[in-house]
Length: 161
Image (spheres, rainbow, N blue to C red):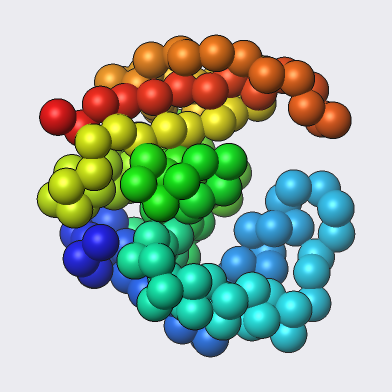
């Protein structure tokens, strides 16, 4: 994927070690405590190494005018393949409800099209109505539902052709 990706309000760029504190704070919003910044730096290093190997990337999302980190968005192999990766995103709660997830994911979707991929996937907890709404806006359709240790997961797909 070519980076950086830019939209009217957002910039999605490669990770930097200086993103570790903000990423730790984002992970803390999941309710499992704040991971140590050093651990998050290691996650960023692994992400950069995986991107160099596969060309697939999660990218920090920054608001263009404010310059602040509000989350991440990009492609992952996750439950899928490099040929048909998953789109993934997570934003701080303070950034919810403003269209940022749709805007960032739309930019990633267009970048994925440019790579020649034919289809993207997404997996979302069945109760995550906000993420399901974002994906619906982007043209994703439900494919099937699976049951995992933490509940039902909705699998969605979108053709890039």
